[in-house]
Length: 174
Image (cartoon, rainbow, N blue to C red; front, side, top):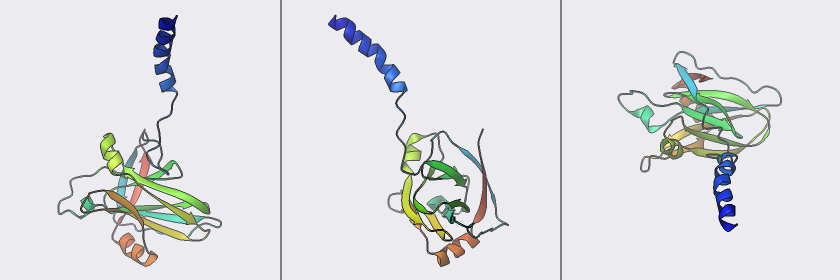
């Protein structure tokens, strides 16, 4: 009887494991399976004012690879809010999106099939949005460790960064 019980538990355990959702990478990130196609436009530098009752969030990609002499290519950097991806940046680019007022979790990571690379590039930040306000964040790579940080940017500094960045246009890969 004991052998039958152990055998039943052993055979049932893969079934239980299939129903267990994978833990999220970080608070604010979306599903790892979501990937973006990104194109950047150096000629456009659009900005916007928040819609009534909303706040606006700008995310500026600025990693160590953005400052090398020769740029060969780099995977897109995804940005998520409150557990859903909202878009991605390419090489030295930015985009913006609206959020409701209140507390939010912002997340970023490199879009890659290599789990180690995704984990090493994941960063998150919390912020409280107020209607009518704009918030600016940028990715920043720590020189000593190579870890990516997601840091708030002063609005005056953000204008300089936006003027020197391309506008990111993206769509979800099918």
